[in-house]
Amino acid sequence: MHVRIISLGTNWWAMHSHDLDDPYCFRKRAAWFNSTGFKCGRRLHLNWIFPGQIRFNGTSGFDPDFRSRAIGKTFWCSGPNRFQGKNHLLVVRPAKSACPDTYLVTLNDAEHGPIQFGKPGWKAAGVEVISVSLRHARYEAMLLMTSESWIESKWGRWQLSTDGRRLQLDERIEGGLQ
Image (cartoon, rainbow, N blue to C red):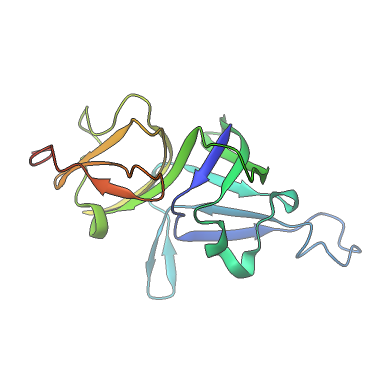
């Protein structure tokens, strides 16, 4: 599956290889993970209601020093899969000239408005949830969307732009979830 990354989550961590004699075990051979969460000062709160993560291996072309370079790029991914109660998306390698099948987007309450995750109809049938963190009225949601799918918030219906580079409000739809 080819996935274009539109935005990533707040929560980042790494796991090194088990061979500590390898001089590259903490950098080149490490796996990097991303998920949803909230930063409150120096503390990170996960508050997952849908636990999940994406994983960047060494072959993915991901550089942890320049995370923003992954934004707008298309990657070949396996998954999403369910493992140990979590959703997992593995980013395998760059897909330079491939047309994306799905788009990885991360929404939050400040930029996209309140979403009622417990109510039916907050997302189109084609949207796959990778991870959602919820703390009182705040949320961060990492989702896989197709070009035709949508997300409904109190501000209205969010869809991918025609160029597939960002989320935008559908101005033909008035209001949103009440």
